Image (cartoon, rainbow over all chains, first blue to last red; front, top):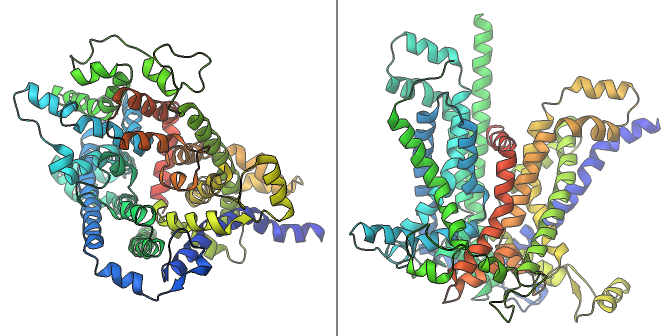
Length: 303
Length: 309
């Protein structure tokens, strides 16, 4: 009897610490933020002393040119980065999907960039982009070209390149894993039927990898909205607002402009955006599971 | 399959890729051993006298001797390094223990609220640190406090000094708390996919032999998911060790972590490249070591995290 009771409570005991911590330090703060976004709130005030202003913060932001620009920069950054990384990562995976010795060493070297701190990545690239000291301009000059003001005139593109450097390996490794788990029989059959290498890629490999690729792309997209440190170190959001992504703008609004209510409303906009993306990912994986189940059933009925 | 024969262009591509991914890191490593004069004058890459002076400058506050080239230790980098270590190690350990218990419950038990718990975990995984900045700053400074008049608050104020109420902000535990919470969803998600693979029959057999649920968990399940734990540990450590934004909002003078110091030094007008590179290298070394030691587990964890949506 006693044992049975203990058994019934076991899952709750196992869950309790996680629920407690996530409740206190994630869900409650998120609720607090939503509440705060409807208030005129500066850092020296306790939230109970603040004044309720309704949707004012959201409306101000909606018509705020700086916020819109920062939103546009964020979207351009995220979409470009993910598209480029997908293209390069999948391409490399298709190229390198062979039996070569030292593949594991290669993969180890490739994941180094994404393991080191974003702050350090920003630091490295800031040095390499430096107009006079930097490696890139020095190389250009030694070859007889003019130096380029990377972080001045082409700030957004330069930041995008740094992110591509850091995160393409992520897509490459996931794509390679997907590629190596494809059913060998389908590829074999295509080869026997005389499909060329390109045909194999476009009609067999890519469609079969698609489920994994979509999830990977969405994961990367969600992560691309979180990028902050790399850009902070490289350009501090400048020159002007040209690289000020939303995450950076939120932190500046909170610390420099001292408008916590507006920053909270901004966070909410970002959160809604990410929520939609996550929901999209969720729906897509569910659909895929259903399709896989249906296919498995069809195969079973045929045999 | 036999070893395929590859043409030279393929090897050229491989070499380029390796150069591109490791090059910047190697560049930083080399520069961290150069004097600023050498970095700025840029006399050909590899011909220079390596010096550990930059590292001495960076770590001056925990060195047992005073480096001869400096008379005042301005950069409190060693202390920040210790803060970073404390915060990263404790938060990783806590996240792992709490996370794998929760993951086990989610995989193996049917209970009320299981679906909503699982869904919530999945959803909060996407919350970026920047979104947490405002509420965490507000809560940690104002609401998560013990009044200095209260019994516990009085004890803390008397033993540690300081003014005002005792708040979470500015303490190691404040930063650790938010890191644990931030990393939990991810750890739970990854570990679920490893726990599912543990054969149920093993657990049943242990139960028949009279083991309670906790014994089954600690003696059967945990040893079997070691690779998953390793992967989760590395990912958690990496985030806690590398994170800047929340730490910068929550730390005070004595609890600064390494990324904060680096960012602060970078934003000054006259950048001392050599020292900065040395500090960057010190920050990058632990993750690099983990990667070299456990790349297999990291890759397994990455694929499990992405594929098992």
